[in-house]
Image 1 (cartoon, rainbow, N blue to C red):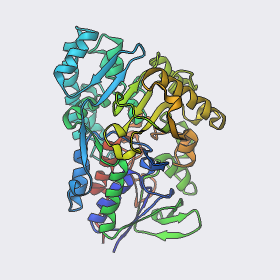
Image 2 (tube, rainbow, N blue to C red; image 1 turned 90 degrees about the horizontal axis):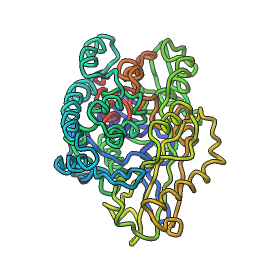
Image 3 (cartoon, rainbow, N blue to C red; image 1 turned 180 degrees about the vertical axis):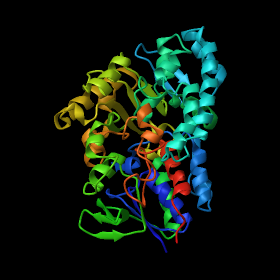
Image 4 (cartoon, rainbow, N blue to C red; image 1 turned 60 degrees about the vertical axis):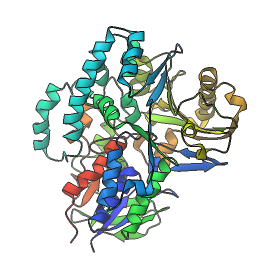
Length: 490
């Protein structure tokens, strides 16, 4: 039986392993950490459960299709629940916008802020729908390893304004600064700067509206466990505490991997769910590369990183929604500090996740489970997080206490932090970037690391660092692409 090794057990790697197993490969997933999930790792502490990374499910049909490819039904293993509103957005002046599937409610809230922007909202939805049809349905599941694919997509790129940024595209339909922020912040959820990310990402508005925003009962770990189950039922295996140090290449072809402890595992193909820059710069460090050289990897622009604080409270905050954005006083200047100047600013905008609002099993009775994240510069900022982490956490705590979580400082029962150092050292991400390479126009599609390696035959890439990009829909789509480019087992 043909053997496949998958490096990393994030959603991209797990989905790839399940699909390869369904096609007849003997699959082994190798995970550096002590449990599967990668960025979707689960922390359990003092009776609280914390999803480490992704929390928003916007394309549940991709999970359903994955289960179907493996001969099962998603509902047999995991229960997904729709959320509406999708988010609550709290502006710096205290104004709250409920971002909902209810179009009438959306128009009413928009009219309250700027009546002239209601018509612009309707036009924006139509544009988002067309971008979704072309860029997501038409291109996200197409391999972009050939220039012909790029040339074929170019006319649509020009017609739909893909050369513009998300913010500039949104600004064509909204006059209000508040509404421009509200409808342009989505790239931040996948590591992009709204002022430089291609306008193709305006498709997220239609993606949410069409398929909804969901959560998994039991947390995102339930989906991780579900896919691991798919792999194991097919005879595959997931090995944890198995860090890969090198992809072994023989006569230009991937032949297996070497683990950090020296063990060698042979295979017919290798799929890397590791950060693409890490794959080329570290795992293929001894292999001569034509395109993804060390110099090119150094010149690439990487996404921002994240500061994430996981905490549990001894009380419940029942007026706090499942997904809440707590925006700061600055928008573009703050993003310039993060992406351009790489300065750790004193102010911040926050995403607050309260999963116990929907699932009380994630915290002890009468308590709440939270995580809050702040976009921050990656490690090229030079910030010493060993000394900055606790002061920064305390500042985030004060901001939450003064806005949406009164009495927080007296209610904390447990606490854990993740900084850019963890993204580099624990998650093997270049420069501690949280979402691999930044999703700019010339780091997308053909310009992004390809799903079929340009450097080594028999090596394939999935996950946030390759096409089509970060976010659950992106990484699951990268695994679907393998069905088109990985030959059947022999």
